[in-house]
Length: 53
Image 1: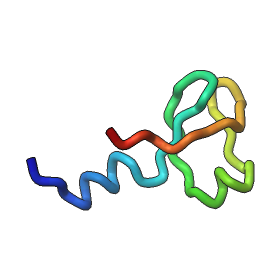
Image 2: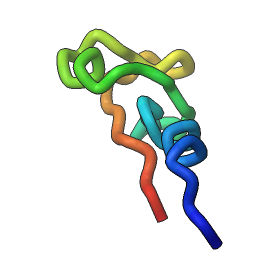
Image 3: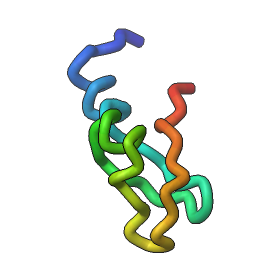
Image 4: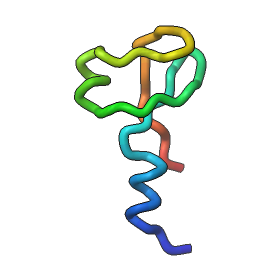
């Protein structure tokens, strides 16, 4: 199966997963590192990037 750069960017770029409630949040890397972004559901600031399998 061929990998398309557009599809990879759409699925993984700027998408983070909350470590507490596993919900998805779309934000830039710099804002997540600075701690400006929190989860909408549980207000946690513990976010990880979406895993590429």
